[in-house]
Each structure stands twice: as structure tokens, then as C-alpha cells.
Length: 180
Image 1 (spheres, rainbow, N blue to C red):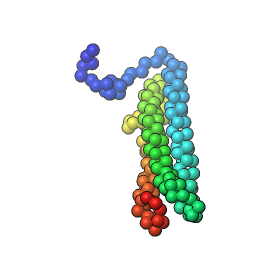
Image 2 (cartoon, rainbow, N blue to C red):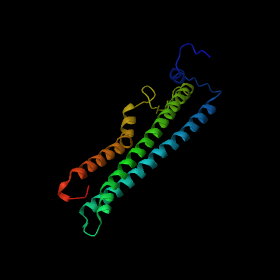
Image 3 (spheres, helix red, strand yellow):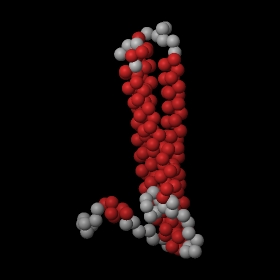
Image 4 (tube, rainbow, N blue to C red):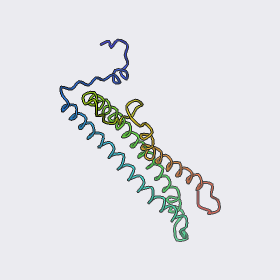
């Protein structure tokens, strides 16, 4: 089936929404908002879980560093020295990817919601509902989007870098005489 040379992305970006009345448009916008709320809840839950797990892992690691290890065997020391940072790093990577996936879905839903809102705004002309889409032109204040997305998009990777630095420091810390 020929589409006249248009790519799938171009076709997706040229969606046209036709509603029979204002009620139908508002119901559609409400449904999209419910879906968007679910994605935002996934992001919030994943971020909360990440920061809780990372705080416990960091406290455990720091406590282990200051712990008297004379009663521990060399394998226990090795497992804890390498295991805690490794678990922290893996957790950051997987949760960071899961947050990124939910963010992409939420961004697409926000864009569709903004497109429907534009249609509603066309019907109720003097009153204008703010656009909250994820792309330029579909958001009234674009900077609010970036500042709102910053913590959960950056912090998992910043914590992952911290764990990489700790793994690097453990490897080259000869003052502790840990078995390597």
C-alpha cells in the first residue's frame, strides 16, 4: 500500500482528530489524561524505589568501609566490597532504563493530549486550556517540561556514575589491603 512517500513518523505527526461535539472531545482528553497519569505514576514509583534502594546500599557500603573486618573471611570481604557497588550500579541502570521507557510513553501521550486540547480550544475560542505536550509548539511553557523531567532523567545515571567511581576506588585502594 503506497502512502505517497510519507514515512510512518510523518503520518503519525499528521494526526487529525474530529469530534462530533465538545463533550466527546473532553471525554477523549480525560481518557488520555488518565493514561498519562498512569505513566507518571510509573515514573514516580520507579524514582522512589531507586532512591530508597540507593540510600540503603550507600549506607551499607559506607558502614562496611568503617567496619572492623577482622572477624570476616576474605571471601566475605571480597563479596561485600565488590557486590554492594555492583548491585547499586545494576539497579541504577535497569531503573534508569525503565524510567526512560515510561518517559517516552508519557511524552507521546502528552503530545496527543495537547493535540486534542488544541481541538477543544478551537471549539471554546475565548477560553484557552494550556497546552502540556512534550514537543515544541505543543507546550505553552517548554522550560517547565525540561525542569520537571530533569530529576528522574538525570539522577539514575548520576548515581550509576557514583557506583562506577566507588568500584574504581575500591580497585585501587591499596591502603585497606583488601584481597583482590
